[in-house]
Length: 407
Image 1: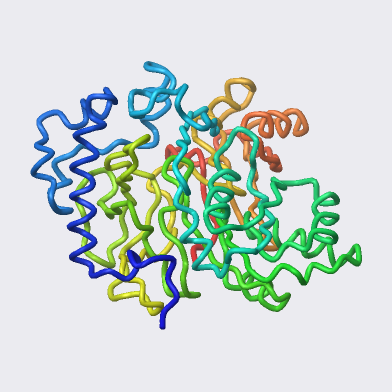
Image 2: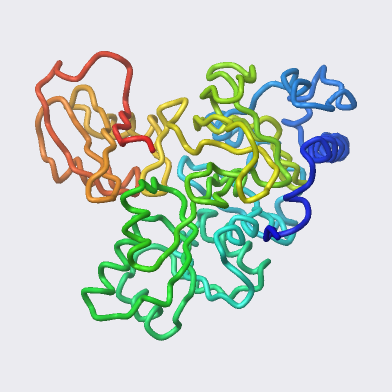
């Protein structure tokens, strides 16, 4: 018999759609008076008429790029949050800065299903290497682990020597974090003579998991599953079987729309991921993530009946996730402002030795060390600097070039 987190994962598609839109209508009627931006978004929209995905096309999109200007105009959340700030559990800060709320509900970010599908169970000890400092990542996974009944080691990223000590003495059975950092930990454990064989399962996110890295982790005894999550929504979709796509999480409505519009595309066609989150604290309605994906046809082989995504297929805009952190074109522009002696800049994102790389190409010359320091100060990530001849970078408007292989 299939092993599900609960009965909702195997319900008939029609029953799920009916329930989702019934819950959405009820939520919007309550949240609309409390969230001014949501009220504007629903202007001229009959909430009672929202009964199927086609009806959502009447609702304007909210883009991730809209959040910071809205929050600057109406702090702290731009009028999108229905719960007053003092009544939240946490107020988190992502690069931008963009402020995100966290409410008090159990598994508020929806991570428990993803962890369960990755094989994590009550009684497991989870090494959580997502950041706990300001950003939501660590809290997203911890809330799901607690909902399952797991103990959590709140490791965060870095501090590899201390993490190896924790692995040696605390014997975690599962891992959460980027796949790159898991490889780093396993490599350093092997070099230091630390037995890390206790880690059997991993839920990874925030960076690519190519087949070569997944296979290498498997040879070391770690079965790695992927989750697609954002700081705004939490877990959107997750793997239940390897190479079978990502199952859409319960409690959200995912659309795939044509980039630059809110029009849904056909199953199999690549478009922008748009998410509606049925959440009383933060009722995001038609939130355009900027990520590209496509729906897969048919049902997941595990028996879960929700829609499936092909996975992350790139960005609809130039905002790029590198080593689990978003880097925005505006940040590259800020680097140029701090170094006005330079011409055009282009941040090139690549992949070497199973890790994301960043190279800032700059027209002109100067101190590579100073420019690299500015790059790290603004993006919070380390990268190399290459000076090129003036006029050699294409005049095509591209500020960030993501050259990592897809898949």
